[in-house]
Image (cartoon, rainbow, N blue to C red):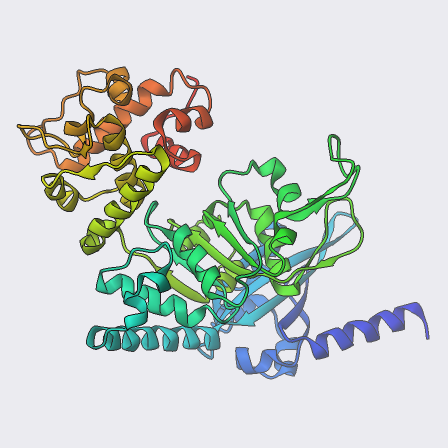
Amino acid sequence: MSTEETAQLTLETLIQTAQDHVFIVDGDGRILDVSPGSAAVYGLRREALRATTVQALQASGVLSPSVSLEVIRTGQPAQIMQRTGTGRQVIAEAFPVYADGKLIRVISRSRDLTDLRLLQDEYALLQRRFSEHLKRHHDPEVDSDDALGELVVKSRIMREMVHLLKRSAPTDATVLMLGESGVGKTAFARQLHRWSRRQEGDFVDVNCAAIPESLFESEMFGYQPGAFSGASRQGKAGLLEQAHGGTLFLDEIGELPLSMQSKLLKVIQDGSLTRLGDTRSRQVDFRLVVATNQDLARRVEEGAFRLDLYYRLNVIPVTLPPLRERREDIRGLAERHLDQLNRRYGAEKVLHPGVWATLMSNDWPGNIRELENWLERAWLSAEGGVVGAPAPRGSLPGRDAFADDSNIAEPAREAGQAFGISLAPGQTLRSAMDDHERAILETLATTHRTTYALAERLGISQPSVVRKLKRHGLQTGR
């Protein structure tokens, strides 16, 4: 048998046994072959599909749209969502094949997502029914402080979240935690790990926005000795390997570079990885939990996040509500953090009774993180053993506790006192706070040359600084 015949038999076997729906198209759009399973999804017999073109299928609505035509148009790989003539929803990706600089083939494969969507809808229905059940019944285990570890859960909506996490903890299903910055996604991820069968393994916490893209692959996948200039002589295990047997928590997953998204998807699918500079793969086994404060579906539409990775991650979505929607939790959170501050600084201070009105009425746009920062500033600036004694006149939350502290009030002074705290006619509180934030950032950005330096000065995370600068159209070191 000739080499050409062997290659043809190999190709036919691959097409016949493919689980995905494979199309092989020439450079003009004529369909040369398809996998047998394509007939059920696209509503035409295999022979009929091989007798037509992708242009004709798109015109008739069988392919809506055609991913192969997108590759023919651009000459680049493409990935799209398709709605087929049979009403199925599929994710399709296609790749060009060149010979002597000419496009000769387009290889596409698609995966039917309809069943997955139905499962997700069913899961959402079960969540709603479970939520209704919780409204009628209290679970003493959820109300137990010992069972909740570091979590503070008093509100009904958060008890529902705890129930959901406890139900999913014994499994290895991927959990996608959604919610605004500072709502406690990391704390819930840690507690999920403690409830899981992997609790004896490591909990590896990775902030995807904090690792420079140039170092991302070596940090995540590790490297062999001599893999690149400056590499350790002993090599290094990456964060994915370190999570073996435990839980890998990827925070700010929406900031994951596109090049790393495809590599992470492969690890999730295959359960193996290859270090930089290595030729052999290594098996890894971890529970994946990811978190983001972004709309991942919109990131997919913008082309900044892979659709197939999104569906891999969105198995058990858990949305943690902002603090303003669960004010019942504020007292417990404040008391817990006050205890932590007392242990950290070796003193026994108490909250002034008058401070609760301020704590409970504030919207806390920074959520738990902002509440904790406020308490720490108030604790450090409090004279004597009472924290947060209210000022005799109205003020912004926290101003009464540290208005006379020059170090804590310094950012506002650096931004210039010309900006007052009163509202302009017709101006909303949110707008005034945004203006005030921009004024502070604009001034400090001129004297702090990196986002890391600015983050340290402001006492917030570097990813938060990046987002704020981007929102206000500012940059550092100007």
